[in-house]
Image (tube, rainbow, N blue to C red; front, side):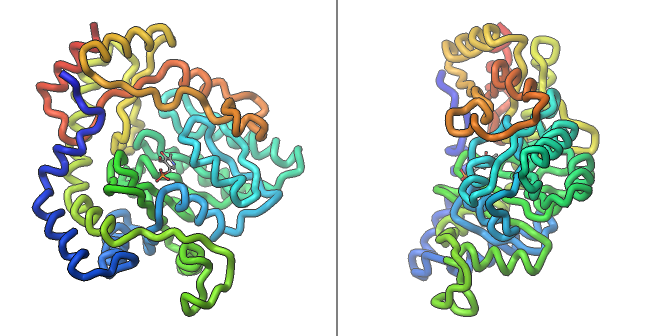
Length: 372
Ligand SMILES: Cc1ncc(COP(=O)(O)O)c(C=O)c1O
């Protein structure tokens, strides 16, 4: 037996005839870039999460960079990012000449720690940076604690970009991610809960002004006409083939999120008592981009992964090195109290296969295997 970590083939089998028709229609039509289906997708994505505007773009990293550009983040600005995340969250900050300042995460949700954010803001002032923006991440599909983070941001004059590359469609106290921050970004990388068959991303905002800026920045800083350039921008568009694929996947997304809840519940029921299972705070819904266990130690994790591998069950460590310890990022400032939780988690978390098509029988086998 060799199980997939994410079963994209099962999902494709479910929607293949619709995908074939949609792709053929684009080939017949020939509008490969910014065809009408791109605008249709943007309308439906905005509707799904309750945001006023959605602007698609080339990938989730560009989405973050475009958000920083639209907010006018620049040299001398401090942008607060968690250390326990994928590199893109921090990478875009130096790309706009600003400084990432690393913030620790909470041990139970793995999301940004509000107290650590406060310390990092004070530290930024001390070292002569201008606190300008915070990027909470909805890690592994679970929304960050926006009720705790947004007031800190407001008190300190920070703009808020929600990095929902892993969490778009999750629920925070009745609201869907995408509608909670000044700007929210997501990724349609194939392995994401809502993924296309290539690279893709999207940006959400309720602000007409930011939406107009984002629309300009994603097409070379265009003005009223595409050959009128008002600002330095990027070439970051979603192509029409990816848009039609996403339209078909969005049609089944709510159902898939439901299925992911069932998979996560079965894991937690089977594994609670043996390992520390994920914690979802009251009023929040994770979309389970990952189902991540905490082992007692790195040694226990090594055993766990070896046992799983021998039985054909893939496991992955997201993320083995927190960003503030990576070669590319270790010189940047951080919460002066240290980032002990990020370091601890990197040493002992492990993620199991997770997707909407994981049947209960296969899952029982996975659970029995990893319990040993
Ligand atoms: C938290 C986070 N932010 C940003 C990104 C970047 O998205 P992309 O790979 O589409 O550029 C990813 C995805 O890989 C991610 O997991």
